[in-house]
Amino acid sequence: MNENEKHLLESAKKGDIEAFEKLIEAHEKKVFNIALRMMGSYEDAKDMAQEAFIRVYRSLGDFKEQSSLSTWIYRIITNICLDELRKRKNKKVLYIDDNIRSDDGEIKRDIVSDDLTPEEIVERDEMKRMLSSAINELSEEHRTVIVLRDIQGFSYKEISDITNCPEGTVKSRICRARQALKEILVSKKELLKDRYVKEM
Image 1 (cartoon, helix red, strand yellow):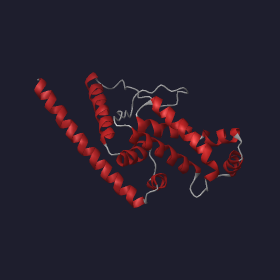
Image 2 (cartoon, rainbow, N blue to C red; image 1 turned 135 degrees about the vertical axis):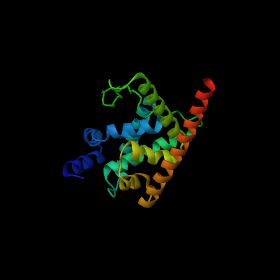
Image 3 (tube, rainbow, N blue to C red; image 1 turned 45 degrees about the horizontal axis):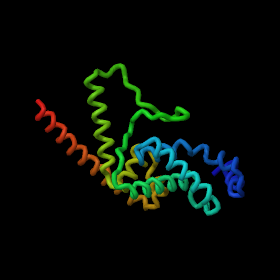
């Protein structure tokens, strides 16, 4: 944590709203993206991110600075999403590359390449839907590590800190999650192939 962040943190802990807003500014986009990938819905992601920052503000006095501020914030948003997912029986589909309407336009949209043929575009879109559906079928702990590692690009150490799991456990969990994802995808491809054969 640099000196400026330390100063903002001290002020925010004393109730300075402006200092708090400046403090979380750098983390807003990442928090929203984690929520979006975990929840699969723009509206849900907004709600989860808002809840996370409310919780961060209320708990700021309890932050002991044993981990980095960013790790602490990402742990909060991850736990909030997991708590919400556990409350829901009918889990929503997770769309990885859907076009997202964003108030600030910061969410990266998927741009179709002019080089792709119509058949390739259909095939690519089908693969995206299949992957999104497969991730949605993973257990909560497997979905979490896939989102944090393969979609958000966190390091093993960062994921270890965010999930409060030993790094070795994180690595083995990611390995098992990828294997589970692969098996689901293989199964879906077989079903898709069977469907096309029946339709011919």
